[in-house]
Length: 219
Image (cartoon, rainbow, N blue to C red; front, side):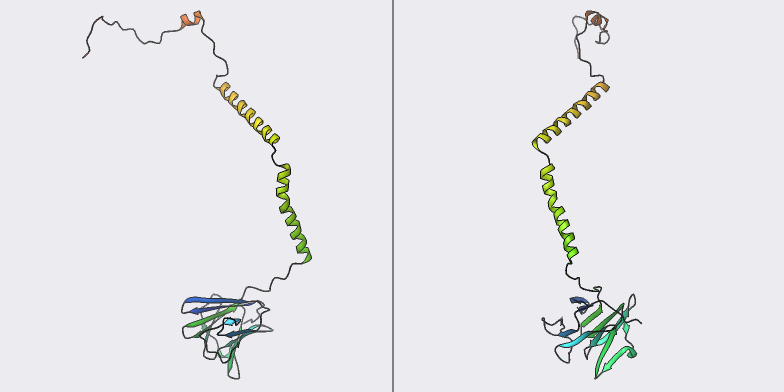
């Protein structure tokens, strides 16, 4: 099993199944000490610690080494597997203290009472460094382009003359479309009065003639 891990450290503290707190440490932040104190790098309450602060994690040439509190039980799982015991052959013992190397893709879980501490490698490989001169140059270029947009709009934007010209073009286009529509409907020719000849040629549109008596009743 490879124990190489070049990233940081990520810890989650659970009370039962409820996540209580979480901490993340970059690879440059080593070692990590624990104590029942909010000001400690790892504020660890509920675990029995032989001294305060307690060396909980330290960097080695091959990654992280986790030092276990004396009363804590430990489990381990590989990526995608279930938790299981850590073999005795992989537990280091020195002066009554036990430590375990945190392998890449491995998660450790420490138990004591109702508390459990989950420890795994962090995805953070390294802290982002300060801006370089070339980064400052790109930042200035982007800032100049961003600031030039409103200035360009004020210079090349619509003026009252351009707005009036645009309105005139829009009215002309609308009138042209209306003329084409009237022509298609045959409404483009003006009306004229009928001549006497056209009036005599018109057929009456009053229906069929009916002879009505001079006096009748309707019931």
